[in-house]
Amino acid sequence: MKLNTSMANNLDSLTRSTRAALPSQELTGDSTEDSTSESTAAKRYSLIRGCSLFEHNQGLVIGNLNRVATVTSNFQRSALAQLAQGEDPMANLYEPIRGEISTFILLLDSLGFLNHINAALTLPRRNLENKARVSNGDALDLAINQLNVRSAPELMQSEWIDGCGDGGTSTVAGRSQYVIELSGRSRVITLLYSLLLASGVTRVRFADDLRQCVIGDLDIGFGAITASDLGSNYYEILESRRRAISLFPIDRNERFTNDGSLPLLTAHCGDVDPELMTQWSNQRQPYLLIHMPIGDELAIGPLVEPGKSPCIRCLSLYERDHFGFTRTQRIPLTEIKDFPAIAAHYVAALAASKILHFIDDTTSMRKINPGKTNNNRATGLGEISYINLQHLTEPQVVAIARHPLCGCDK
Image 1 (cartoon, rainbow, N blue to C red):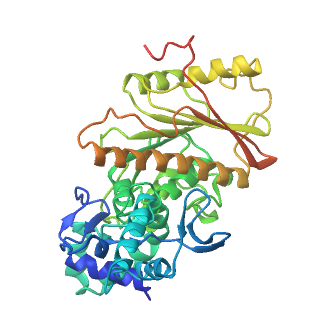
Image 2 (image 1 turned 180 degrees about the vertical axis):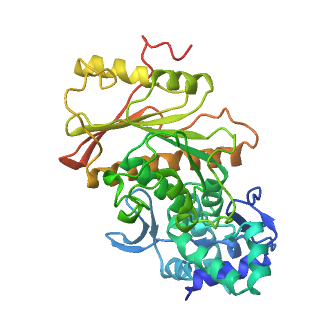
C-alpha cells in the first residue's frame, strides 16, 4: 500500500516516540508524540490538513468560511508552503523578516491552523506483539499502513477542533476509550453500529441483545448485513463483523457484548420505556433519543445529561406549548415499521455526529481537567432536530431549555 509523504513522516515519528498522549489500553488505538526537544518553537509547527489559499480583495487568505488569516507578503506565502511540507519556516531568516514570520506563525496558531505536537496513531500493544510474533513484521507493517490510511479522514476532521494541535491523534484515539451503548432495533441502529466502529469508537455494544434477534427482510442492505444473513441472529452477525469494520484493530478473541462497565452514552431509537428513562436518570446516565417518524416527520434528541440539561419531559412540555400536542404521548392508528432507506442513512449520520461530538468533548474536558467529570459541556445538550422526510436538506434545529414545570433541575 503506497503512503503519501505525510503518512510516511507519521510512521517515522512513530518509531522515535515513547510518550503516550492517552493512557494505553489493549483494546484501543494509541496516540504517540515525538518527544524530541525543539530549539525553536517554529520547528514544531506544521499546517493542519485541508488548508488552502484563496484570492481575496486584500490579496490572499487562508482558512474556511468560519476563520481566515490574511497573507500580506510573499514571505508569509513562502512560510505557508514550508509549513505545509513540514519544514522550518524560520530557517535562514534574518530581521526584520524573522520577526514578521514569527508574528504570522503566532497568528496562524491562535486561529487553530497549526499542529505543534508531532503525534501519530499506533496499534494497541497486544496487537503489535501478536503480529510481530506471527509474521516477522510483514503483517505489522501492513496493519500500521492501513491504520494510517483509514484514520487520515478522521484525523483531518479532528485537526480542525479548536485547541487540538496534535494532528487530531488524541481526539481520535480517545474515541476508543469509551463504551457507547445502542438501544432499540431499527435500520438506524444497524447503521449507527457500523458508523461508530469505522470512526474509532471500538467499544460499541447493544443494550437489548435478547429482543428481535432474527435478521429479517427490513435489515438487508443496512450496515454489515446482507441477504445471505437472512434468518441469522442479528447480534451475533454484527459482533462477528466488528473486526472487519473497526478503525482500530481488535483482538480476535475479544467480545464487547457487556463488560459490566457503565456506558458514556446510550443512544436509543424508537419508543422508550418510561422505567428505562427513570433508570438512566437515577444512574445519571447520558442518553440520546431518536424518535420514530410521525407520518413523514421525525425528530432526533434531546441529548440528555441527567441533572445538567433538559430532559424528555422538558421536550414534551415544549411541544405542548408550541404545537398543542407531543410526540411522546400518541396513539398509533397505522403502523410504521422502519425508516425509509435514505432517511435511515441520514438520521444515522446525524446521530453518529452528535455521539462523536459528545465523546470528543469528553476527551477534551478530561485533557483540560484530568480526573474531573463535572465540567459543563458547550455543545449538543438540549437540541432537537426536526426532520421532514420530503425535505431532508432542511432540518430545523431547536435548542430547548429546562421547562419550569418539569422539575428536572431539582
